[in-house]
Image (cartoon, rainbow, N blue to C red; front, side):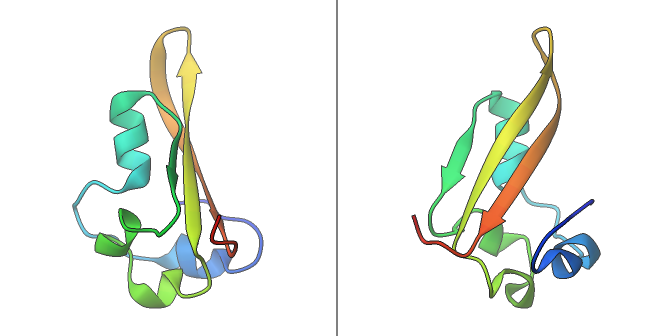
Length: 79
């Protein structure tokens, strides 16, 4: 994973479990998803990675009608 900004080194180096998190769901559904409690990613990312974050958004990337990737954003704000 590529990550930039505060706390990015923990995300880039994290080992995830093979379970669908927020980005995976956005990839499957092709919809922008918001997670104000990180309930989706708390199941797959280590808690020490997420300790500085309170919310996330996953934005699918399209080429015509096909989703080819997802941008995930994490933030300290709870809203």
